[in-house]
Image 1 (cartoon, rainbow, N blue to C red):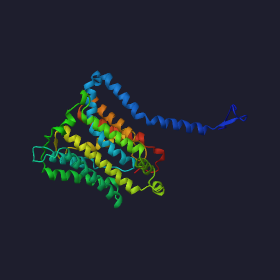
Image 2: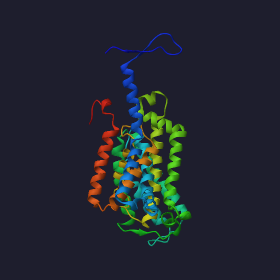
Image 3: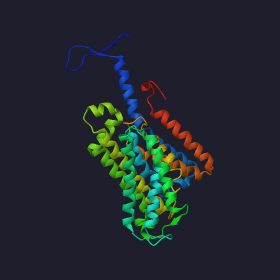
Image 4: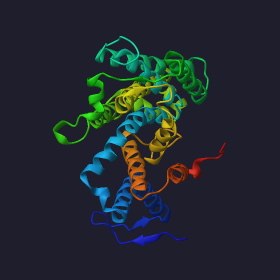
Length: 345
């Protein structure tokens, strides 16, 4: 195809050549830029659709329910986001969350023993979860074991230890301060749990966008070999990321214990699937290096709005799980650049 001549520019007397390939490249860049906002547009469209089918969706109390239901998934998904940005995966969510919730339940005022450590118990439990995250990262980089295998094993270890500690029973949380996280609504608006989740979002955004660790995470996810050649301490960054994830899972354990008013070994059951789904649906690529915590916020809200909408529309729980399964397949299909993938395993 012959290149098309365009009139001379104002500051040049020679005609300029506009290449068709350049136009196609610009169109592709515009499409990719628009693709970043597709999850947000999907969230708006989904909300409007559900609201049109059931006007109760936009009632203030229902919006509070949606925000409250999104608080725990958001905290967990923020931790998963950093791991996925590395190009890794963390399957230990449910085990670490169980450890955190059980430790908090046993160390605050409860119906099973005489402990009453108050907020000190929360600090100890979250530190323990950070330690588990450290072990995940250290084993992964130290022994060169794939992250999914290390964290899969830690998932079962966490659930097993939680079961052993409780002996298969359930401990009720009687500490009013812990329960207030889920029950109290400052100024009559959102429960404290929602504000805690938003605080976690703010902190992780600062880490992602304003710190060296955040830049390193994207560099490693974009190409680990190149990042290492550039002098980035890849192993150290990976360990730190898994520690951050463990800390956020521990925070999720606190919110779970406060919300349910108890601790048991299966308190995190089903959280892994919803966590990974929210991250991927929000636009963070499983291949790493693309996405972020704001994408995850959108993904979590899509999941929360979809779940709430299906309840309002009277759709059975079995169908809801099927819809979530279809959603994650579609999200992965849309997020992957298959033109760059030579081999799919």
